[in-house]
Length: 88
Image (cartoon, rainbow, N blue to C red; front, side, top):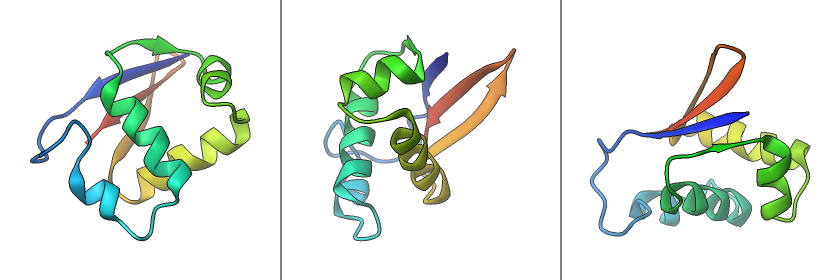
């Protein structure tokens, strides 16, 4: 299960941070997944459900989340056996 939180410390001009959209180091898949996370309500998803909604595999989605984490757009930590994703 994934729990999505938001940290609105970045200045945004749209619902998705402009710097994320313009980042040449992020793939279109990563930008799309991040945009969906930014625009959906705080909610709980299973990785399988989210992968299904995005028409991708769980492995690919995990890779995308790792890239977003490495680039400083997403924090991933665990609470009570649940992965918590916090948009930064």
